[in-house]
Image (tube, rainbow, N blue to C red; front, side):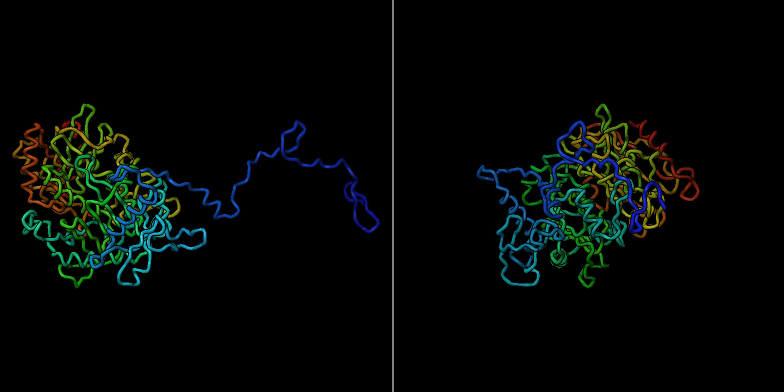
Length: 582
């Protein structure tokens, strides 16, 4: 019996005829008669996976700032000074010093497998451990500081630890702001003390709802205790105002990667050299928004409280995770600090033509300020907050905060293209499989937003400064069909409409707004101004008169009848009107 070409052997098996031997596969130096050549490189210099992963990341090259004696700081000195400053920011007012702090993510294990440092009292440069008098549970633990992380690092933190954080198909980070999807102006408080008693606008019509120093201290203590109880906090050291002569240093301490990335985008990002010599901030935000305020505390009317103390140069956030509170809180601070320097702070967008003609766009949220100031035919200086000095205009921020509801590539290509890796998308809805964002879906809120660095706009002017404005455009979203699409104003009319600040609040801009509601907001930003509106108006009138600027009133709301009867003026029509003004 045979099977194929084989022959049966004696024990019932099969044998096959012997053929030529299979050549041996060799590796090494290439030879002409070689069957197989090994093109692989040398093996990695690691014996474990942890060792291999450690080779993947290289340390950033530190700079060497100069100390007062003229000598360069060592890396150890620099890190110690930096951590001392952060510990001081996190200090309770009842203690002489702040908590123990250490740089780095607590989830990243060290060589010995531990996550908590084994050093004591500052023996290592990445640790600051002050000597505390009274021993408590909080004084025994370390607070890990994630300092000025990059967008990529913040993405990793958000996706890994924050529920509701996803990477969308366009590369942006989609996040949720929790129960609050808009600002809560009725929960904002300002400390009334000897400093602010006569300087700020108080009383009827004022956005400044007072609180006393003691209540602020109670809320500050609550926020600091909460942040110190966490295993890690995010710390951002950044700047406000592109005018180098009037720049403000700000520090933001927060509990969420979302908040850290948001402020990374919205504030001016320091260079490595500027960061090394940052020093003590001019203003500090304590964002403990995941933790509520105590409603039994005096002046509290809900579980949310956003508190400003201008004397201490501090802001405390409790009970709201909406990131816009940080942005607008700092804007309020600038409305206080800049006029003291004879600089006009403005709630406006700003762009510049090819010939250097600058236009200001005033308007409340939802009037089209961001959209209309972002014009691919003109240089963008900024979309929301500016200063007008003796030499020209400067952007306060380092990013843009655009509404996303019904966003389309056709209507707003620059904003559409700016939503990519590094951008924060707030409260948007996306496909669970493809992660494609549906900007028309308002399931979470109508106030969906995108926060991105200003350089994501191709025609952004960097640095964000420009000459004196030629046109001052006041935007109003009229919901009652009264205002014409465009009106040219004289100086007196410009002041009237600037102080009136008429518009209609659109749904989602603030909590509780479901349909357009008429409102009058002084200076087109009464929620943020600190002084009486006539003081800002007088400064604007003086600057417009001296520079020969022209005022315009543009209606971006309804025409042909009120809301429900007429139609909202198309964006393309408004853009043509703005082009004609230019």
